[in-house]
Image (cartoon, rainbow, N blue to C red):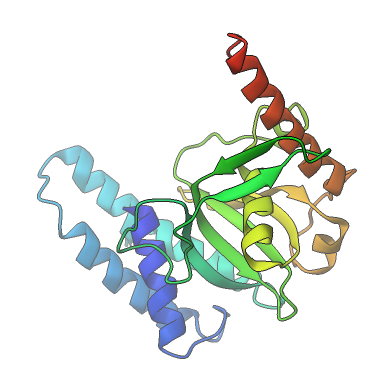
Amino acid sequence: VIHDILNQFYRQWLVAGHGKVSLSSIADATAMILRISEEELGKYSFTSPLWDATRILMLGDQNTGPGYFERFLESEAAESDSPLVPARFEFSFGMNPSASDDPASSPQPVELASADGTEKLRIRGRIDRIDITPVGEFLIYDYKSGSMHPKAKDIEAGTALQLPLYLLAFEKITGSHGIGGGYYTIRREVKRSIVLADSLVKDLVVSRIRPSADFTGLVRHSLDCSFAYIDGIRAGRFP
């Protein structure tokens, strides 16, 4: 439900003619996201104390303070000076169509080739959010409601392939240049964690980040690991 609310918020916000959420527009953004949240949460008929507590955590109240979505907007406003603009939401490729998918989604899976061009793999997926600069550079986010997510070291070890492969997929579809990816945790503590980043990213985001030591090589390494896993599975070795 958190994904649906954030997806609907940004689509309605942009259709209404707004730009990025900023300190000057955060009051209007808060009114919109809370209205959408009430509508979406109202579709559920749960009556347990746990559900009541979950609603309070999401929506906030006078005793607990701002909820998840107001904290999310505060995080968004903190990046209002960045040229990266939220532009695509629930962007899918090769997936069964869904009403919540971004209108620009691609019905076809994406084919990626090995370094020597002798092997091919086709991937399908859905990217929660893509922020794009005016010149087309893009950064992807995966929304997380849990407390754990892969770290940079997991990508380096070849055990977290989602972000690098999604970057390659969107590059293949659009011809644009992917500059990074991260996780956006939506809980009591809302936090962006950019775990894969080109050196360009440090000049495009307000918050401090650590660029990947070898961004291009790391993305390529992730693709190489994908082919190695496929070869291993074919040989009966499962990761």
